[in-house]
View (tube, rainbow, N blue to C red):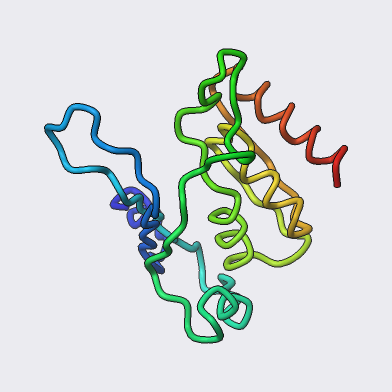
Length: 155
């Protein structure tokens, strides 16, 4: 947050993702991690907030900055050959769909510098946005590419 402010980015909101099905603390020595934070920044004054679109996520009212969504599970959860999670921090598609719809327009380019399992790319394509994904782990790039190819074949 400090680094972005030093680069003259404007802090807009801190969104709290409250996980409705958090993983329990295995060690039983800490509280269960049931939230993650999304810092929304903008550069310049022409940033986008699709206010009317966001009301559908709050039954026609203003959307608040705490979003209750489950972790990835079931069909959405990508599995490796060993049957376990293919990516340790896969995010739910609904979370990224909401974020991208909130802060961009159709045809915009969405940049994800931590592409992971490709959730941003899928959400971007669902919403008619272009996207650029970057990751420093070859296995995640492969995983994301396979997921995106599968999405494109099935749409």
